[in-house]
Length: 411
Image (cartoon, rainbow, N blue to C red; front, side, top):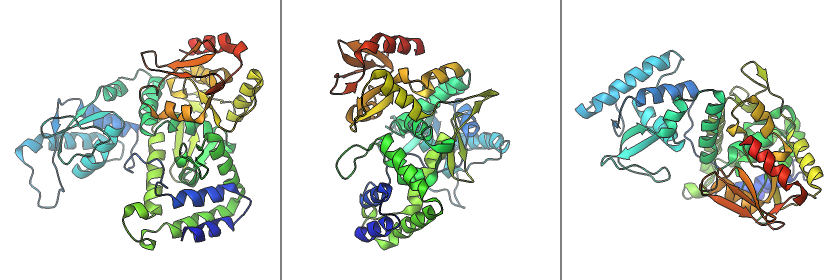
């Protein structure tokens, strides 16, 4: 069955590696890649309205189960009804509304995964994000949620949202920024994300970690198909139909579900002022202005080429360029531009890069230092990672002071 899919895809153009990669990933049970949010149409104003009303309560008790036509609210659920009423008054001003079940089963779930609310059991025990509980009963705004509401400017907002989404999507936010900035016209389509970007950090058939450079090349190949891209989409769509498969959900392929998950990530990225989500054309784009100020990012490939030139090193297939300070740590427009610089890059092996994106303890290791020739990155607290020279990191030793000074100026 999967061999037939591979043949169908590759026959469109046998010279394109992206088609072989696509057939390979669909054959894997983890073909969907990253999927963390429930799909739902909302925006940042929507989130702030929810959080603003939620902060009025210590622990808000909510209803449970399905709310049918004959449902009768209990006395301890009346407060939740009032909460919904007040929320909907404000949501109506921005042409939104929310029901009881959507609030509990989608909004609270997404906000918890983003770190903006905490959820509790009926015994008032806090619920861990990655665990599933049968008795969710209370919800409360978290400190991160309060920080979002109290943001002083759009850059503080970018940082809070960026850190929340980057943690949620396992380092994907900064990577998406870099991938879009490497592509013509600075956009990423929903199918490019589905087919290629969402598998970033996984392994290919040779058990090699898939890096941003691989993804960019796959997308560039995919775009050369022009109108024939739709043929690829149709082949995958017709193949990934649950009815075509036997057994449980793990063994099945579901195009609709896969696309919904990609849309949920695009919707979440659209919350950040650095991205534009073009819902009609199903694209995510880099904004070219903030407020009334124009932003002009250097093309990602130009920054990378300058890194190799300045450091006088050759490209290595198992290494990947990493932004030490990510774009969402910028405190103003000038810092945003300063982050977009070769001096803020470090060339590390793919395994270390994956660890930096997945390990919560070192996820925000943005301070650069050196131990002899080894590179140390830490989060300004006590969490650090040491990268062995030539084994885990490649750079020009002559530039150590320049690199450290530039990093200190950003911090």
